[in-house]
Image 1 (cartoon, rainbow, N blue to C red):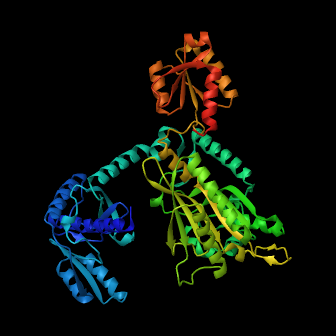
Image 2 (cartoon, one colour):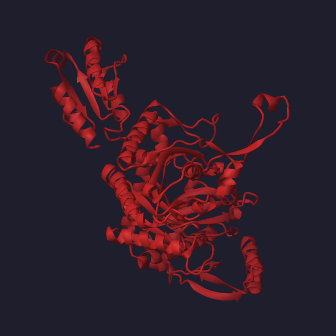
Amino acid sequence: MSNDKQEKLNIKRHSMAHILAGAILEMFPEAQLGIGPATEDGFYYDFKLPRTLIPEDLEILEEKMKKIIKGNYEFQMKEMNVDDAKEHFEKAKQPLKVELIKKLKEEGEKKVSIYKSGNLVDLCKGPHLNSTGEINPQSFKLTKISGAYWLGDENNEQLQRIYGVVFNDKKELKQYLFQQEEAKKRDHRKLGKELELFTIDQNVGSGLPLWKPKGAIILNTLKRWFEDEQLKRDYQPVITPHIGKKTLWETSGHWGFYNDSMFPPMELGQTLEDYQDNRPAKESETYLLKPMNCPFHVSIYNDDKHSYRDLPIKYYEFGTVYRYEKKGELGGLTRVRGFTQDDAHIICTKEQLVKEMEEIIDFVEFVLQKTFGFELKVFASFRAKKSDKYLGSNENWEVAEKTIIKVLQDKKIDFVSEEGEAAFYGPKIDFKVKDAIGRYWQLSTIQFDFNLPERFKMSYTDDQGQFQAPFIIHRALLGSLERFMGVLIEHYAGAFPVWLAPVQVGILPVSEKFDDYALKIQKVLKEAGLRTELHNQDEGLGKRIALATKQKIPYLLILGDKEEQEKTVTVRQRGVKEQKTVGVEEFLEIVREVVEDKK
């Protein structure tokens, strides 16, 4: 969608929030209005109402909104000085708006803008459509009701928030609603439970997933494959601890600039028994759970002296990190407190930057596009002009930013340039992937870092014997393995490709009479490296097939008298209606080929 078209849609979404507010005032004249911004897919508005809303109220409000749209009311903007605006909303008995105006006055605002449309007069910066009639009444829907603290502060009173979506036309709305229904079916939390992949036990802790055997098989398969791919590309494995001394985090800067995402420190100088018996520590050291792996990798680099001939050095680690997230913001695998990153740091010279960046991007495309079939959307984040918040020399920033642009352009990769979105310690490239139902997820990141080389005094000797500071590129392709697994579960709807499936072949003897033959077949398949499961429960064949199908096993082998006599297997392939009977070796060849092709 073009920028102009997207901007108009955003204006439409904000205008719909006002139309919702107008409908609320028709239904509840005494309602107090909060705020009503546009969102990525639509809008919401917060209200203080005389009663709690129920789902059936949304249909009533939708009809009222359609009448407002049909009324073709003009959005009229008027500027008022803050005192007049305050008086106006006091008379209108809108204390929440009065509170907002007071805040604006404290911030030095002299005037505010208000918009009138139909029966609604609202405090708003705009912009809006010319009139309500510009909206297709079939292009929106109210979706849900929730609670929301006023201005997002849990110390304030709780209001009722109504969410809605709006698109350019009925077709786009229908597509969105289909996507939402499909997303419910694919929800990784629901499928994770049904397929016995993971659980989150509140006795263990919120945001700390526990991987069950089948989920662990997928994760370990993924890690083994990815480790092999990294070794092919000259990455070197490292392993680092889960905690580090306070001095490490002070040196890295995390103690100061990342402290809102870190867990409180641990004082280590006594055992748990000492603590329980109130025996004080004779001497104590302060440690913290690591929120990132970077300082450890730098410490490994600094343990040796390096020449330009040693570079680039590429460390990688499946490192588990811990970040504090508010309990209400946690969600399944996609927002957790403990997660494992496929973390890598490329330490190189300025002259090596272009080649290294090209290779990383090639790696990203190999993993996300070729292997998993995702479409990519690329974002390049740069400094804001005329800002002094950034670390590192202007020369290094220019080198890094020009490298990013050159590599993306040379590879003919379309990208969105985001000025001012760079981290304070370096520019970056983010890769979002489009899943099977059209949603985008942030996964891979390539990030320059001018902070760590300076703070840890990293160096190498150049060809003149002079000490130079290296460049550091952070690289995470899968990102958080937990988040990546959540995305994969939903992308595949739990039907993993054969190479990743926790159970690749289900073996179903027609009756217990054929259990011995089933065990022989299972032994052959296991020796060939396939993951199998024997389904010989005391149930009818039809029910066992239904249960195995629900587990989304790629291949089911039915074994009866004919198969035993002819030394064959009857194959039911996931998603294929026709069964076929083949020899065991022929079946193995079929599966080997599919596994090798990562299908």
